[in-house]
Structure formats: C-alpha cells, structure tokens
Image 1 (cartoon, rainbow, N blue to C red):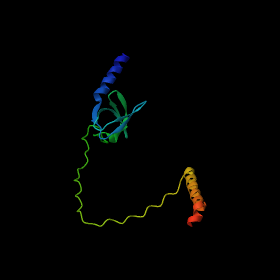
Image 2: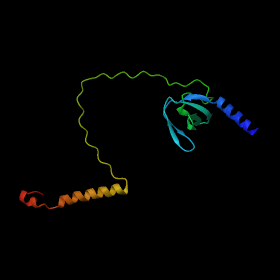
Image 3: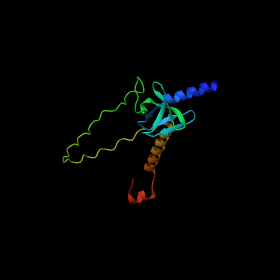
Image 4: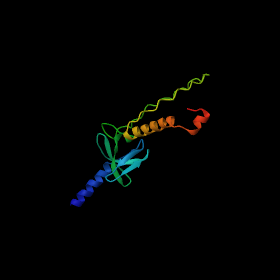
Length: 145
C-alpha cells in the first residue's frame, strides 16, 4: 500500500511539473555538485520559492534563481512570459574632423596596501638610493656624478 501511494505521488508530481526555458547561462546547484546550464536549455520546473526554483534537467535535480527562467511571475508560473521592450539602436554620431587629443600625463602609481607591497616599495627605493650614491670607476674619468 505504501509503495502504491509513493508511486501515485511521484506520478502526480511529474504530471504537475512544467517545462521552462532558461534565458541566460546559470548554475544548477545539486546536492553534491554544481552544473552549468546553457541559455536556451529546456528544464522541468518541480517547485518554486521566492528567489529560487527547483528544476530537473536530464538526471540532475537542483535549484536555480527564478530570474534565469524565461517565463516567471510572482502570481504563478503559468502566466505569459515577460519580454523586454525592444529599443532601436542609437543613431551613429556624425563624424567630424577633430584634432587628436593631447596625450594625458601618466597616472601616479598607487601606494602599496599590503605588507608585501610595502616591503617591495621599500626595497625598490633602497636600490634606487644605492644606485645614486654608488661610485663608479668611470665617473672620475668621464666627469659623471
């Protein structure tokens, strides 16, 4: 009797499941893994929450965000699919003969935020200071430094 009741519940659940199409690539979170589903994939909707939908895709069952489905509504899943308004592409800007913009000065390098970065900056500064004060044998002959 219990087996018959279980089979009846499973068949009723399968009959209530509806198909939906994914609008964008999304991650299906199963019990033991994550599966990436491509946009346009048709899945069976098994249950729906406020933010997630339990679906079945092939042999995998898990949850995806509600926003990943093509047709969804706060009232019910049987409503008409939402479509975004179609806007025409912007008109191309007229091309005018313009002078090239002057080259901008290079940006100031950022200061280090981590201890490692500060140590690297300190080593770089010390090496530069050492190069400035280092006496080269050719300096006396050529009149350098």
